[in-house]
Amino acid sequence: MDAAAIIEALAPFPRGGIAQLPTPLEPAPGLAAELGLSALAVKRDDRTSPRYGGNKVRKLDFLLGQALAEGRRAVVTFGAYGSNHALATALHARALGLEPHAVLSPQAPGPFARATLLAHAGLGTRIHLAEGWDSEALGERVAAELAERDGVEPLVIPMGGSAPLGVLGYVEAAAEVARQVEAGVAPRPDVVYVAGGTLGTAVGLAVGFAALGWPTRVVAVRVTPAEVANASRMRALAGETVELLRTASEGFPAVEPDGLALALRDDWFEPGYGVVTPVTRAAVELARAHGLALETTYTGKALAALAADAASGALAGASVLFVDTYNSAPMPAAGPVEALPEALRVYVAECERLYGAG
Image 1 (cartoon, rainbow, N blue to C red):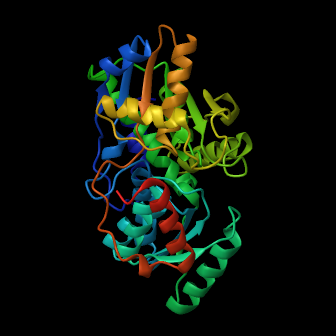
Image 2 (cartoon, rainbow, N blue to C red; image 1 turned 90 degrees about the vertical axis):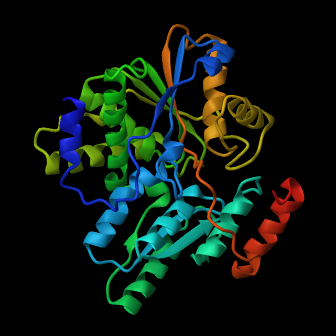
């Protein structure tokens, strides 16, 4: 199957029109030389939207497209306090006339979460606080209340947008990479490194590369707890995504989830979600020196894993692709901290104490 056929297979699914594609594929010879790699390119998915970018936008384009097509009035999604997905959902939902609700779970204070929460305050996101990562029951209660209020159920978007419909965004991204490789922008990647939060990005890429017939290996660097990101969930999500595609397009190949060139790396999660470590800080600083703005929860860990593998010699002679899934557009305007629930006001103050108000 070629890239054009993959794009055609996605045509039946409605879009929200929020993604600005294709994103650039940029060779990174300076960073490659510093890491000792033969070839390195960066897929700039930080630029998926000038309003608020990152990998979530590709997924939300399909998910919010469904919400509009079905006449929903609100969306409910999930994430940690500093979740980029929850913020991207809120911003793009608001722009499309949908009321955003975010069920947020606790995380350790970090240098980026404060700005995310203040942006929610500015957008008027309806925030519901969960006690832990098991937040589905609270989300169900919120959805039931909205259905009673509106007379129509809200669209419930899982954490990270990693439903099969959202994963289609990264099947498309694989086809996009193929077209850019064919155009001579960069060599075909042997291995791809991406942060593994809820695994939709990695699964979509792996399914897309498999449909293309490429042997490209996708390495998902786990950054969330094992109950959120695990091999069983990864296989199930892959199977459901392929089934969705084959229902819409008989020509889409019967990709077997167990046969995907997809690895989940568990060795970079500790000491926990969002906990800032010296090695992730160093990766963020390395990226900054080469013109990339990363963060310490997701993309910094993915680059740290790539750098460690390069130093060990595991990537000798390989063409490597790094997927920058962070947002590089300006943050939405901050709202008053008083607009946040009391627990989040305390959390914002702690982030400021530890990392400043910048």
